[in-house]
Length: 316
Length: 258
Image 1 (spheres, rainbow over the protein chains, first blue to last red):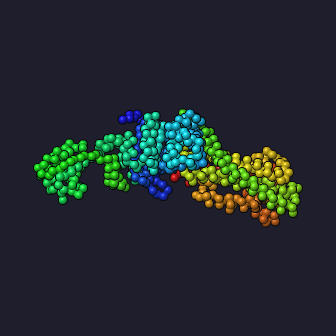
Image 2: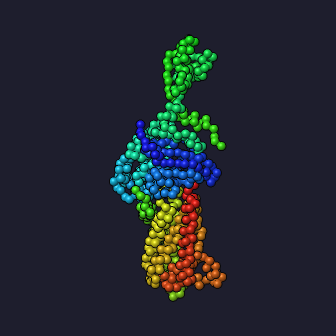
């Protein structure tokens, strides 16, 4: 488990965004990103994830609010703030006629850094792009282009890296590579903020998770705490004889039948003082209901996420 | 690392990128306008020049050289200025420019500087090409260079504005095609305004291109349709008007930021 400095590296206060069309993309948002963490911003399409990071990076203008990145106000002290921030956008947008080396050195210069061949070489080698440095971008595969986008974002040695849907549309192998790379970057001291709608990505990589829906930051929580707090367990009993319906005598446990009446399912809170499992098993014995197997499984982040975004009433 | 007061690295990166694009499209950037100009020279110089030998003591072939240079200069400055900023918007790489520690004046300096550089080189190449057809004597070389640079920068700024304003390639081409080229043809590029009837002459003075062509031609032959100071003033006025529009665009984020 990684440890983080107490002071935030990104502070967002009262941030809102209403587009000219009248669409309120972000409702007032307050968020602190801790130095050195991997923060996953989860949300369905159109939730406001990209708008949020676009504002921090200077691409979209906020309607209200203040943002401080690594001690620099992103508007008043935009040069210092932007030199600390790297962005990998979701879309693969590069000049297709340039070579890998040219586009990465271009990005470094754009971000006010003097030429540094050793650093650029290191970035390209780290991303397995060194052999492709003289290749025109148009000749690269989608996965390679994604790596080029990351190389461009890392070219100016940012301390904060935004990854907007980094593994959208990439194959499983590259996805694993990306995850490994993100961990290496974090070990190198880079704070990572990634947006994703892949729950397993957040579950696999993030230290903390923020859930955003309809422009509202619903919650921000340590991933493990979140799963512990909101996670429920399911006990599945495989019956000897199938049932047509759950007996009235078992009504207190709110059981469900599945697999054509062959399985009895009990959902319970693992943090509750009494989970109800021992009493259920005793009651089944008393009723003569036999089972030949049992299994328990904990709810995933996906279950938690779905319940959060579907159950929360929209704020007026 | 402290941020620089002036992001010279960023300006140089954009400038170099734009110049590299010109070298990638050297045929389009340089050779095509030279061939087109040569054709103009053959048509106007040979066909009309055989009937109208001199204008104000200058051979007709030599007389049209400043107009020919400016015609290409207008078109290429606008095209290069517009294309430079429109392409990142079109393909999406504008995100990098907007998220970089580059100020609006630096962005303008880099893009417009590159567009103007290409135009100035083009103007000099056309001048050299023209020298193959007719003997050319530049009476005020420093003023010629000054007008060349000022016109290139001003029309590159026009192009830059066009590149931000345009929502499509069609829109980007419509202003040069429908406004600038006709104004150039009607602006005394191939004739002296004095040759027009009084009514049309009065109308012609409403055309800003008249002042640009006149000033540029004066630097070659010492003769002008309007006073040089007025030509210079009109060019500077257009330059500052363009700067004001660009400043407004960046201040409001017009078609750059949502």
